[in-house]
Amino acid sequence: MTFLRSLATSKGDLSSITAPPFILSGTSLVEYSKFWAELPDLFVAPTMILDKEERALAVVRWFIATLKGQYTSRNEALGSEKKPLNPFLGELFLGKWETELEGTTILVSEQVSHHPPVTAYAIYNDAYGIELQGYNGQKASFATTMLNVRQVGHAVLYIKKFDEYYYITLPTLHIEGLFYGAPYVELEQKTVIQSSGGYRASIEYSGKGYFSGKKNTFKAKLYAPDQSSLLYTIAGQWSGKSTIINEKQKSESVFYDAMEHKVVPLVVKPIEQQAEYESQRAWEKVAAAVQVMDYDTIHVEKSKIENQQRELRKKEKEEGVEWQRRYFELVEDEGPLKEVAELAGVEPDEKVWRFNREVFEHSPDSKL
Ligand code: HCR
Image 1 (cartoon, rainbow, N blue to C red):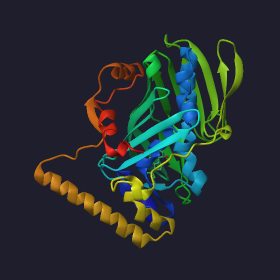
Image 2 (image 1 turned 90 degrees about the vertical axis):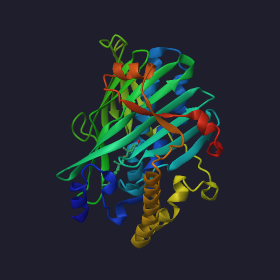
Image 3 (image 1 turned 120 degrees about the vertical axis):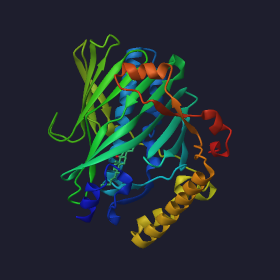
């Protein structure tokens, strides 16, 4: 009851929720950016497809494939959704995927704002010339026994060979099962994936009962650049199997089967080699205490980090300076990306977080 009450009074700020120890996670939210590329083969696949329509479809397939990790992996590994650690400003999570066919895919994830919390990330594979960047924050509201979470921000996929952008909006989600102490995520509303070439996918989500009586369901439609010709309809479970109908040929086939794909673990430097602002090193003691549910140590170690951060902010205020983000900068959205956002029918953010790769590559952090 105390937990439900804390949710009801959280006023949209998820970091202020006091969760019972068994719902706490020792993983910081800054780590969640990795879920975008845990299947490196699907991430780079669009770069090898010459046909524009097929390529747009490959982007949708990769996106659908990311959802299982993003939204159900805690349930699968730990039995329920957990409350992640609230990253501090400047917290960094770095890693790479090394696979035989795709080579190296790099992840840079940084907490660029603490109040409200915003994480920015960049993921790139140079061998295939593909890069994803984006940022996200969350706005929450509590309704009876459900926590509704609207995501702020977007992702942009860029394919160098075709000089093509895909603007991706983020789904809204809600958390059910709170009353029973076994929270889980369900997606709702929709995602739009708009390509600079004009192709547009609209993906609608629902839970049990709406489309098919199953959890984690979706229905996606891919439209031609003229926006009126429907090319494909895809439907099924994003955490399981989905099928695709080619609307011209009226043929049906399997689109994606999550059971047939195994995630590739991200390689992160051993903690002792990490810098003190790197996530796993910074939260090491808290994570260890979460493992054994030692609530006192969790509290003591978390408070140390929070107090240190408070001191830093105080000092910055006194000196009249602002915290310098490491590898991302807040810039006005302009050029092709603004146009794609407009095509996607979304009100583009006035300022967006973008990756400064040059700065990253000249820093010791780039030695992964
Ligand atoms: C809502 C959530 C924090 C945000 C998490 C996000 C939206 C972060 C960006 C990722 O790309 C996708 C993503 C996946 C997670 O499912 C989502 C989290 C689920 C729970 C967590 C809340 C802050 C936890 C509240 C406490 C509980 C368990 C009641």
